[in-house]
Image 1 (cartoon, rainbow over the protein chains, first blue to last red):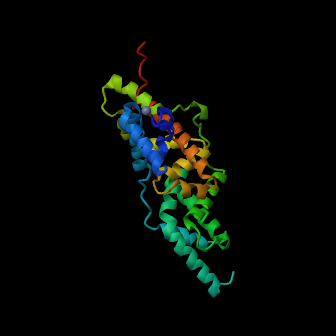
Image 2: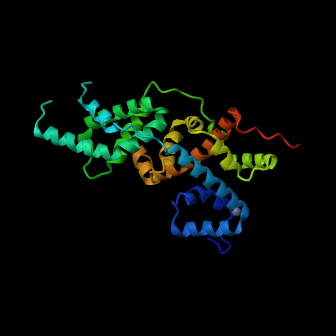
Image 3: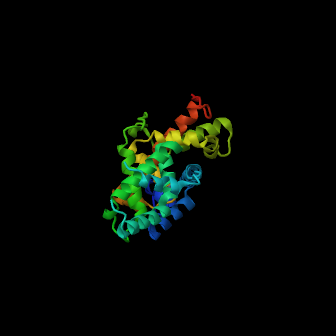
Length: 80
Length: 197
Ligand SMILES: [Zn+2]
């Protein structure tokens, strides 16, 4: 990496992985440094992070049937 | 099959492992199959299949990934599932929703257009958007948004390289943003910004 740090394009390509904490410590630090000085990338990042947060909250909320295990194991006793 | 001590132990071991994965497997099944009834059918079917193939499960490896692989494969093979019109793959640009929301914000003076759109979409609408993703992106997205799996475990479940998970997920997010916008428009929650020109 050059002494000027990341370009917007380089940072942009890594935003998803940054959000998911799937970058190495050095890569994550480079993205963080870019977001600190680049308002546009920081806005896009905040936006995408908010979208992912909302979607995870909505899609992971599912009520479980109280007799879930019974419904599964009973099927093992039913001849096909 | 005789119900000897080996079978009894085998069954008990399977049920114990199944108990640890059943809740998350049910949730994945609901997002794949769309509704609780079909999800239960899918999960029961996967349970029977997994039990039949239980001797191929390597003891000490990740049962959750193994079981969800069986479930996902059953889902992909199921003939009954609806084929919906999917979002064209080449048609999802980066920052789609961001740009759309900027346009909306300029017209509507909303402080948080992203939250506004997604908060106003109910779970069913979000599920509709998810269903518009082609299968290879949809399966990755379902696991990801369940918020329970690392890239590595998704790779293990779907038997694809981790780099493929990363690229599919990146694409899936863009496709989903476009699909969310379209669902929002079709339900009258957001309107296409009128061109300022
Ligand atoms: Zn930038």
